[in-house]
Length: 169
Ligand SMILES: [Zn+2]
Ligand SMILES: [Zn+2]
Image (cartoon, rainbow, N blue to C red):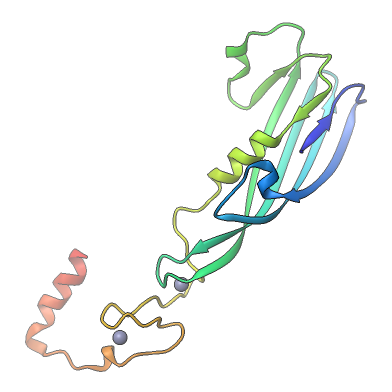
């Protein structure tokens, strides 16, 4: 889907926009809907520097309140392509440098875009920075309504134990 034609490309800077269904790139849950990828390449003689940025909406579950929310996840990568007649495969896997044959017709970015999109998924998900979460006592979503649990008076004799508990948690 995301292919850059490189044959007979003269030196210069090129800008491409791609859009389509994420599932057509085999990018699945929690990603939903369409991907948008912008690719900028700079060609100079036997070298191409490629910068890619992709945005896809993900349907995530908040770690604090367990509500689903949508968030646009951006993923970026840069790859340097070097045109070479001969190279061995091992060499080509080094860092972010990829060797391609001077007769190569296209660069196919589907796999890279997919891999980086998966890597870009956050480990922690919060519906908002100040999500109040669920009440540990009654389970109410405190973003939607408050509960009375915190207003109960704690017997002062138990306070040190309460503090200890929260520390251990
Ligand atoms: Zn939340
Ligand atoms: Zn409560």
